[in-house]
Length: 555
Image (cartoon, rainbow, N blue to C red; front, side, top):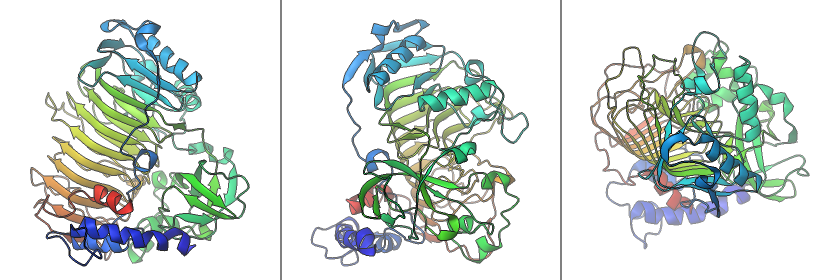
């Protein structure tokens, strides 16, 4: 397996890394003629890209393995033909939803929204694969949302009781979600039941095991299975890893060693509810019992975790939303965890989907990734009166790419009792990337639930938010978080400088910062095995953008 999964690729990868890290086509190896300012951690990574101890491999984050281009679906209709008015005078949501559903029922295509203002009094739903909803540009097509998700669907309470609103971290007024999942989810909410949110959620026993998987190592690009008969190239499957009674899977996600081994896991009810770890991935090829995967393994595969490839909820694939502004009616931000659900765009159980050139304004929560994987959010912006989560990434959302994003400063002061987070990640979510961002407010909200192996790179932030997450969610960080070239404009350390709190992490090229306001202590005792380099030199470290450099190396 080693020859199939690593050795052949690494020879070419190191040659490319010589150019990326050394800056010249004549460089013979990554260490031969390093460009001035090249990070030592980058040179190490280029020699060992798939299982570096501190830096995750994220070159394949985003739709279609991180493709720079979105599919161009043929235009099948526009919403005016279905009765929408572009002067804001009447509710356009029924017409938009009819047009989108008709495109989906015909096998997909692009539904256009011509320039103008469209009032929507309902959720805009994209529930079929290969459907694109395209406006004329975020400055030309505007949807004005008059109602919130509590009004439209109902109160969405917490599965842990109390009066918390789950619209604080779920749902969108533009909601990309498989039709069957959307219908079952909203029916459960209306019945005051807790619906399952993840790829299989609280109905995990309903999904079939396709085959057991034999032991493999993090970074392998192929696995050996017991029975390949139900597998085929192009198929989307779940790799499922269950924890054992000693919680060795959770320890592995935290990097292993004395600290995670001594940690008390059993009382972290919310964290343990996220296990089994479920990782969606496409199969590239099947040859005998060897199955090549679209992305390298995110974790080891060990027999004690009962590793299996399984089925899952029918996903939404190949769909997107482009070129529009979604503006909610301006209402005061609600107290913490009591959001009504003036939310922006959310992807749920979506794979290889995208948003491009989208602005959301006056929202409670901006862009959501809920059990969504391999999606790209590009040229997105959160603006207006301020929000709780400008971006949220939860319930086992993996391999997503958020690039060229902005969180604008709020236009009105924050009401008392509200909370501001930022670019959120939680709930065992892994291998997500935030790249080329400008944050006028918020923070790097690692929201407990032990997310791991995520990257934030080439970002400027006015670091004035706070992270969330209750004690039952467990650690703030798992292993291999990387913050790379981050400019902090207000000198606040919290959640950006992470070498003293995140295990097996890398903090490279960030501003000089100091602790104030919310100050955290490590979850794990003893040596964290974290690294810090080029402290106080944001933007000066080569490569400037870790994700882009990994893409160049991988290609």
